Image 1 (tube, one colour):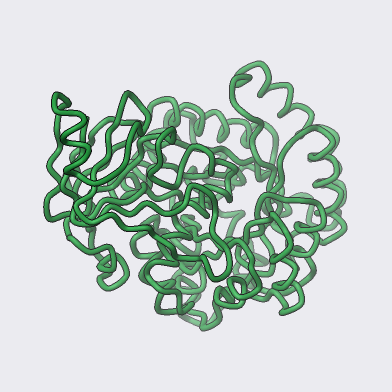
Image 2: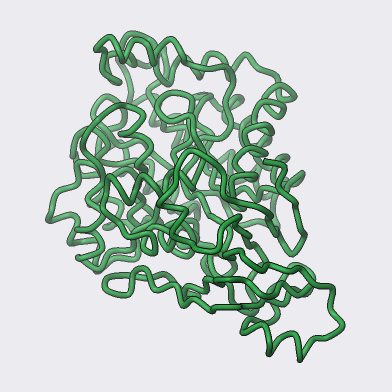
Length: 418
C-alpha cells in the first residue's frame, strides 16, 4: 500500500535522539510511505513515490499528519478489579505508602489478580489493550507484578504472551515479581528476595525456553524504593537475573532517592523509570550511559503531586529520555500516550517535537526495539498513525480526546472507531 499526500510525514531519526538533537522530526510535507507486507519499503515525497509505484493500492492522507506509532515502554497492563476506593482515600489525605502499609495499594490488586482465572484476566486486559491501541499505542511493554508468588506471576506472563499473539497491540513482557513485599513476608523480606532469585528467575528462564524460545528473554524489573525493595536487595535480584541472561529494568526515585538509578546505570539496565527524586549528579550519569531515563508524568498527575521527572535536565545532560504512561490500577489508570505527550509539554516543559520523539524512537530504545520500531524508515516495521489533523503539534496543544484517525500495525490498516 502507498500512503500518500500526507500534510506532514514525521520521520525522526532511525536511532534514539539525545541532547540538542532531541526533537528532530525531519518532516516531509506532502510525504508518502510505501508498505510491503509488514515493512516500510520506501519513504519520500508523494510526487516521487506516486510516479515510481503507480500500481500500488493507495491510501490518501491528504490533510492529515502521519507519524510513527507510539511505543509505551512502561505499563502494568494485566490486573484484575480496581482501586477506586483508594483514590478517595488519597483525596482524604492518605499517602501512597500509608495506603500500601495498611494493606491497600499493590497488595489489594494482588489479591484480586491471584483470585482471577486466566480467562478473566485475558478478558479484562484485552479491553485495556484495545483501548490503548485505538489511542495510538502500537507497541507496549507490560509487566507482571500483581501475583507476588510464582504461580500467579507465571499466569500473568501467560496472559501477556496470549494477548500479544492475538494482537493487534504488540506486547513486550516484563517480569516484576519484585513489585512489593507480599503479605506473609513483611518481617522477612530477604526471604522473598531469596525466593525470587533461587526459584522464580531460574524457573522463568526454563519456562520461557519451552514456551517462547523464539522471543528474546523478558525484562526483569524491581521496584527499588523505601518500603519496597532496598538497594542491596535490588542488586541481588539484578545480579541473579543478569547471570541468567535477562535484561534489566528498574522503578527508581519515585518517592525517595535510595540509589536505584545509579545502580541501574552501573549494571547496564535497559531503563530506569520514574526518576522524580533523581539527584543532579545522577542525572548527569545518564549522559554517558546507554540506560534510558523513562519519565511517567501520569503518575505524579494521578497522585496530585507537583514534582515531575527533571526531563529538561536529562536532555541537557545528553541522557536518553523516553516517555511512558505507567498504566496501572492504583495511580494512573490511563494508557493514553496522547495525553502523556500533552502533559509532558506542560509539566516537564518539553516541546511537542521532543515529547513525540520521547514517545516513539526513544521509547523504542527503552525496550530494546529501536532497530525495528519508533521511526518511519525503510526496513522498519510498518507501524504508523494517521492523525485527524494536519499538524503534529495538536497532539500537545489539545488534550482529553483522540486525534488518531487510522492505525497501520505491521502494515495492516485498522480504521479507528473512536
